[in-house]
Amino acid sequence: MTGILSLLTRIAEARTVHDVWSLAVPHFAGLGFSRVNYGFTLYRGPRSVGDPDDALFLTSCDTSYAQFYFRNGFFSKTPAFRWSLNNVGACTWSWVREAFLAGKLTAEEADTVRQNLAMGIVAGVTVSFPENSTRAKGGLGLIADPGLDPPAVDRIFAESQGEILSLSHMMHLRLTSLPFPTARRALTQRQREALEWVADGKTTQDVALLMQISPAMVEKHLRLAREALSVDTTAQAVAKAAMMNLIFNEQPELPGAVMVTTR
Image (cartoon, rainbow, N blue to C red; front, side, top):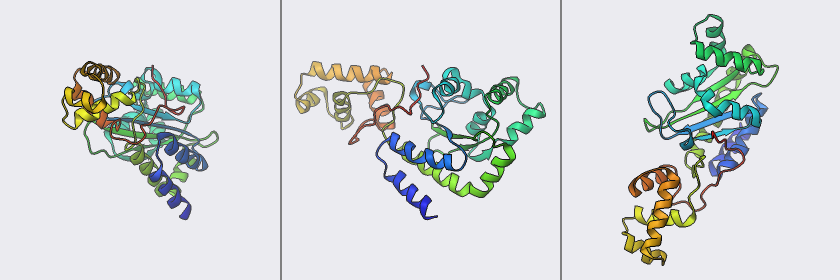
């Protein structure tokens, strides 16, 4: 118990996405899940996670599987993902196997199961997180190590459910409170500064004086910020940057090696 509490504290105090991930993944690996996939979006739609370029995808899988899993939306066709969109909580993948064998999956879902089986992915756990916003959604997939079948994963989950869920939730809560690295172009320091002053209610003339630059340069920084965030107005840029924790942060997170691009 002392070990997991210490780990939760370190995750709560971590300052970057990379640090959180580096703390959580080895512990999952010690439980039999060395391959971990995590995703979070602030722009969930009725049947999708919105634009993948606005979502955060992290993985400990090798590059070839990560690209296969995330690129072209393969993950969104799996029965476990579709379960996570419509549920909150956690489950092992035993129900997926049972539904597959009984012919109860859609043709698209069954095809993803067959593709995973061909790669030796036969069991795992899905965690679907509760969110305050109806547009936000986060989920975690733990892929069982080779040699662990669905009954073995069921036993591991029964014995370690509290440990898995407490770690998963702390990881998720900390990740969503940190600057949000995505596949989009990162904001520069000057773009962030201009957005922060606008968020404080300053006019272009005010921002120019505060940043000691010309009004034309302020407009350039704001235009480039809008382009980087893929929005039409500065008000939208401020709102989106704030939602993604990209402004009013001491040390904005830069995309790291664990982030997956879907491009």
